[in-house]
Image 1 (tube, rainbow, N blue to C red):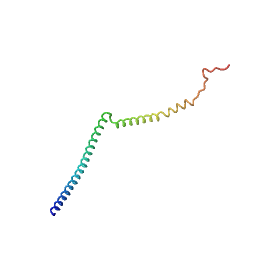
Image 2 (cartoon, one colour):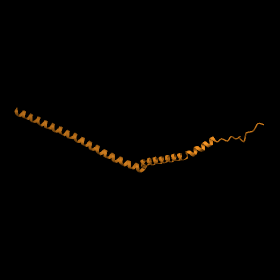
Image 3 (cartoon, helix red, strand yellow):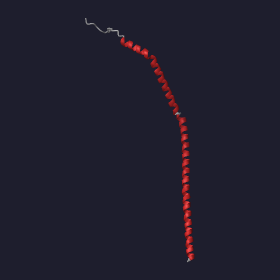
Length: 118
């Protein structure tokens, strides 16, 4: 009977060792899956950044630099406004004089088509 109980004890111990090895293998598998997932995510991010960089380069080559166009348009607009303001200040006084002379100097004349009632 003692040999039988020793055999049972050995079987129980062997079963416990097998169960421990199985759980350890499951933990290693889970750890490896997480590691693989992290590696894949890093690789995907690297690939995405590379493709976005290539896209921006192609977009710049095809469409030109939009920043340069904006700066040029802004510069032209500022220059035009400066020119118009300068012209306004330069010609304002003479135009006001001409306008006031035209309005204030009235020479009443009879229209050539007016007929006197005789």
